Length: 235
Image 1: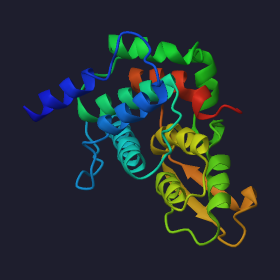
Image 2: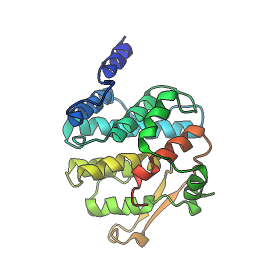
Image 3: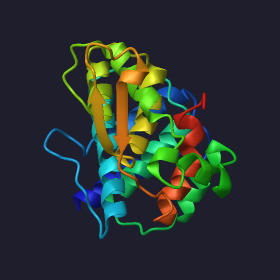
Image 4: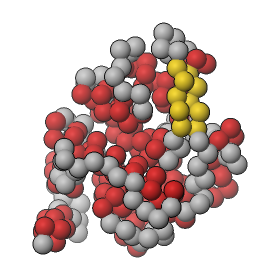
């Protein structure tokens, strides 16, 4: 019954036409969407294989951070329709087993992102192994460390991003973009080796990725092709 009520409440936030004062409506919808991810809920690795488990873990962390920010900050004051669509898709995937193919409403929502990368473009970016990967995660990690400073308390990207928001060291658009990047970091997981006294120089930061093939699961490549430009607009 609780789940039925939750879905019924969400449906009340989905008008047929674009609402007036859409930014306040978007913010309220996201806050309601993320309400179930309270302090007692821990991100989990759910699924039948390594790819599914890592994907569900990524989505869970995005929603956990979203819940924290929606309750304690103004990060979501100016969300775009694409951002709301992304968080809705992520939340549904984190909570429900929807299979390894995109479902109809996901195809509709991802159409908001415009033309996705082609499969060939995406394969070129992902590389045939982690050494050939062109996803700019090391640069993003270095940028986050530079903003945070040397006295950081978290070592992983999503932890640093969350700490950055709590210390009010990041602008809202930077933080929302970071939520998209959490997807890439947690599905390209690896180890970070850092000279803590020289973190401003990227050559002293080496993010060593464990190879993770985005084409092992159709849905992983599908979402990646659609959100890549929003995740790394300067790439």
